[in-house]
Picture (cartoon, rainbow, N blue to C red):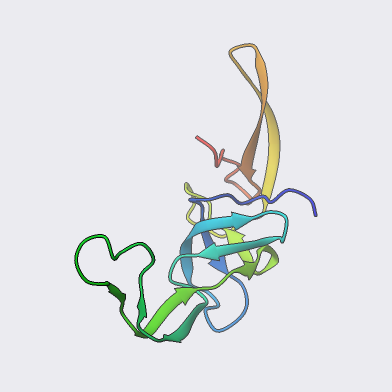
Amino acid sequence: MAGLKVKKGDVVQMLTGKDRGKQGRILTAQPTEGRVVVENLNVARRHTKPRPMRDASRMGGTQMTPGGIIDMPVAVPVSNVMLVCPTCKQPTRVGYKTKEVKGETVKVRVCKRQGCGQEIDR
């Protein structure tokens, strides 16, 4: 699997599924699996029982983790999201340019939209 063109903290737009068209921020990226977890998108509900916490018996009685229905975001394939350019606010494909910074060449992500071409990494 090649490296991802999105990273933690990027704003992305969903291309498929029940949340199609919605935007959210990437919470975690899993490059080896090619998946990303997007904030408040692709949310699954888990029904959990109340359970005693580990190592919580030091201070008096045992503490319990609350039970109930918990909403948690689930990882989606990186091919189902598209990066949103911070300057033109449109979903865009990602290109790369090399740039000289203090005598070193640095690879910088750029927006590939017509008429934008701005750097995504500041």
